[in-house]
Image 1 (cartoon, rainbow, N blue to C red):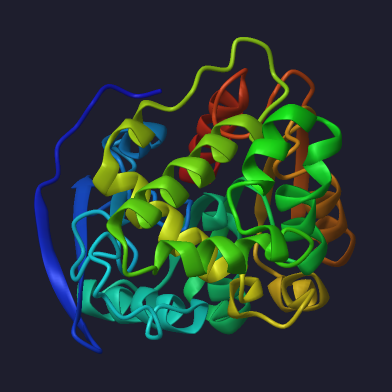
Image 2: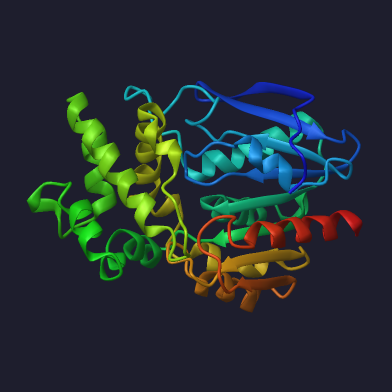
Length: 315
């Protein structure tokens, strides 16, 4: 990864619905425009994302999606209305930010949920996307959400039992995302806090089979874990506000957009079949499997992402 850098400009863009989206730019103001699309939903765009890009070659744009990070209002406030936080709203925010910054076309770099959001944006606005570099690729299908919230219990049975038992007995055979979403919106702060802890404990378990994986320190922050859990369950319970399988069915809309998809073989949160299926109908995309990689940028995945971004910069 490249050395740490700081933004040369930042702001909050009023995108309507009472939402103000935080953005920042760093690197070369005259470089190739690139947008970081973070995961979660609700993770926020941390400083480490900047280091994937050659700062001499790229004009790097980061933004915190609605409800998280430095954007306001925060989903960590239980009074914040999430009805205006959908994939359609997020895609519109990205397009508004592009226009605000005077960018004609930009490369999108996204991971996990950010890969799904990048695909949704590119399929809606293909003329505005110069390339896609995605890793830990997901498409937010019903099957994927059931896999994460239920089927992964076959791999981590003890941990999943604790996760399942965090919801009322009458709801344990139903939609666990929706059940947790209801708990996270309970009037009782103690109920909300326990649900956030239980959800984030499961997030720490199911992301990887790669050796040496350590729990994420971000979940130690009660504000972060509540806002994160609230946004993830909101989107999961609604299939990411997409029709089931939409991003896979519409992969043909990406024709002419070059892409690199980097996927860990040991990524059990986002198994490689989704990235592989995308490349069947997206002939301009290349899939790179990292045999020792899990979910995220470790075990050589980050190096492949940097190499892909360097190659696009050189082109």
